Image 1: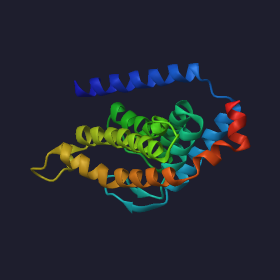
Image 2: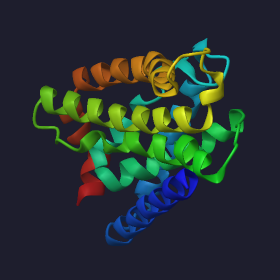
Image 3: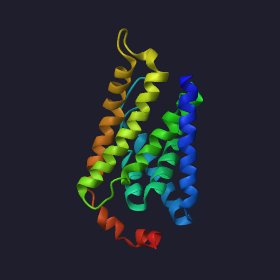
Image 4: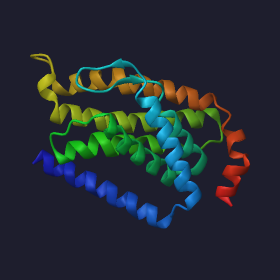
Length: 202
């Protein structure tokens, strides 16, 4: 039952994304941008400082490029960048126990990073809040996956949700907060005023 519910919600979210993509179609310039930034995210992802035994860990701020394109180009480009980043992560190995778990871990969690633009970019506090929101969504999805599909790795007598929270918050959560700090101190407005971004917006 829980697998069907998770799978149904995941598919619904993807349908909403496709609907959004139809309303905000990506041109060649934005597709290239997504490819470049997602590729950079993947390169940073494979440079891991800490690697956890059941997967995940802390990498070289791999969320930053996806957060940046979300800030500069908006939600649709950000979500697409997160989607491509998730697909690229599979090149470094993947572990799938159920289609719903695959969607949570390799599709929706990285797409969540693309929500960094949620609160706008008018101030550094809004930028940080948006990036933090994206991290909460992304890590929250990982926590659900960990509790539902990998609870058997929890120490005996430990609540699986608490185990999954600690596991994911101490890895992707820590990295995500650091990435949010980095993006919030970057000169986003200067990026926005670049000829490349202006050409995309026009």
